[in-house]
Each structure stands twice: as C-alpha cells, then as structure tokens.
Image (tube, rainbow, N blue to C red):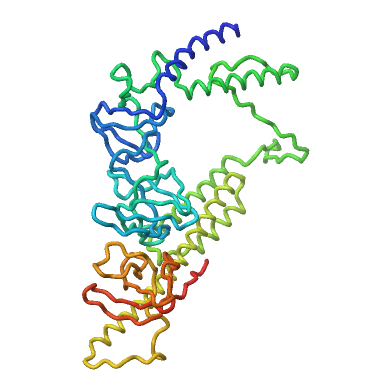
Length: 438
C-alpha cells in the first residue's frame, strides 16, 4: 500500500517539477487583461498601489501561494519615508529629482498607492543608515502624534509588488501558457512540491519514533500532513474544583466572557482617546483600568493581551509628552515673531538691549529647505506642521548639518526678508532641546 502511494505521488509530482524548470526567474511577462490591480502584498486584503492594462510588461521574481506573482514595482510606483530620517544631499535641479541619504539607524520604506494617496500601511524594506534615496516629492500627513512631513521616494532596489498570475503571460514562452509556474491538471507548483517533501519526511520520522512506544502508526485520513497531537502536562498540584465538587481545568466560560467584555469596553475608550486631538489625551484612568483587569483576569491569554495594550498606552503617552513640548517651543517662537513685527511697526525703532531679549531668537526643527526661493539659504527653521519660520545661515564655525531633524533653540540676529516673505537668522548658537519623557 505504501509503495503504491509513493508511486502515485512521484508520478503526480514529476511533470510539475519538469514544468517548473522551464522558466527561470526573474523573467519578463506581459499583462493580457485591462484594469489589473497591483497590490502591496500577496492577497486581496492588501491595498492596491496601481493598475496595469493590456500589453504592459512586468518583471516576475517568484510565484507564491494562491497564484500571486512577486514583481518589481511597475513604472509610477513610489514609497514614503519620514522626512526627519533623511538628510538632503542634492537639491532638485532641471530634470533631476532631489537626492538624500538615510541618517537614522534604520527606518522603513512604506509602500505608497496611486489609487489611495493617504495609504502607507505596508512595508517590506528596512532602510539603514547611509542608504541613498531619490526624493520625488513631499507631503504632510495627519498622524496621532500630530502633523508629520514625509518624503515620497522611488522604490528601493529590493522592493516589490504583487499581481495575480492568471493575468500574466511570459514573454519568452508566448501565448502557449500564462504563468510558467501555473500547473496543469492539478499539478503542484515548486513551493508546494517542497512542502510535500517536508511533510513526507516528517511522517517517516514520526513513524519510526512511535514504533516502540505503542502509538497508532496509521497515516492521517486526509493525507494532507500530520495531525497535531495534544501534549498533557502532569502536575502534582491540587486541582481546582467547581461548586459541584468536580475538577476544573481552567477558567469558566462566564469568567472568560466577562474579561473579554471588560477589555472590549476599555479598547473602545482607548480608540476614542487617540481619535481626539493630541492636546486632549489623558491616559491615566485608562491605564489604571487596564492594570486592574490584568490583575483580576482569570486567564493568562487575557493578561498577555492587556500587557500589549499597556505597552501601546506607554507609546502614546510618550507621543503626548513630545507634542506638548513642541507646542511650548512653537508658542515661544511665535511670541518672539509677534514681538519683532510689533517693533517694526514703530516709526523709530530702537535697538533692543541684550538683557531684554528672550531666551531664543527662534525655536523649531532644523531642516534642509526644499523648494526655497532663489537665493535663500539651504537650511530652514520649521514648525512641527512643516511651516517655515525662518531661513538659517550659520555664522563662522557653526555647522547646521549637525542639527538636521533636531528640535533646537537658536540665538543670533534675526531680520525680515520681504523677497522671501519670511525671516532670516544668522545662527550664532544652537541649543538642542531634550524632550521630556513620560
């Protein structure tokens, strides 16, 4: 019986193995349908990034389960990366985009969508310090921690997209077949062949181990793999009993249902808080309620779920603290600007004595200025929402590049430049601002 089964499997898999060798990857393929979605992952649950039409070509790298093909990002694809992790190396020129280099230890390139402009949920590539990127544009997104500026970049070399193989035809093989890995008459694809091999090896090993142990050596009825065997832990500790005196193996259904109901209610409160304005966030009561649930939960699985939520609360508390610090710095800078404007409106303004000056001439984030007016300095002081407060020029011995992406207070002469429609600061001193931790 076993020899017959092995012969059937070999006869079934051998044609598929020959078929899989017909085409090597990567290979060029052509779309043979209209309005075919390109997606950010290998299932329909991943959001689409664009569409391809009849005759468009793609480069296929591999076939995956479900008939999905992993392809190079088609023309027009792009990713998003946080602006504060990038240092601008080259400003945009005629027919040449801006270029930058990753300054953070590591950051992710999030997959953008031409169909849903605000989607950037998925990512597959981690960018490390020193990696160069091509900047195609920029955009300010509303995030739970406030507005954030992101750069639109060309997809990195090892980034990919996905498309269904049923709409793709190999250019090399022509119209004879569509996806060269597509199996005929129920044949298995190369990934499935390898999975079958692993299953068979595991079955043989388990059978050999169980021969002398009194286990049933009968193969699983569905022939789809090994059935999971439950492991029973023998514990000498006394068993819990219910009211009727019977042994209890765990929490009751009512206890589990009560814990889940409480956690669901707290999750609703959590969602309402983070959807409100960042300045209104207050997690003290929610954090205490989660901790009470964790202590009283009847099941370890519930306690682990609560622990994950408490970690998320800690992250949002940190975001709130940073937001409050940024607001304080921005308000201080705005007050300084208003004071300067009021002084300019006086017919005979007198110089302000040094002891009358505020702590800083300006406060904000130092960034490279992209799209600045002609003749403006290459550095700018920006607010958290991306608004330019002033253009910066370092005095002798001051290296502004060292402070890119950092929140600082700046001292130095500040003047208004009508041709730029903003102020100019000759930076004599920069004081990094350490944001308070929650």
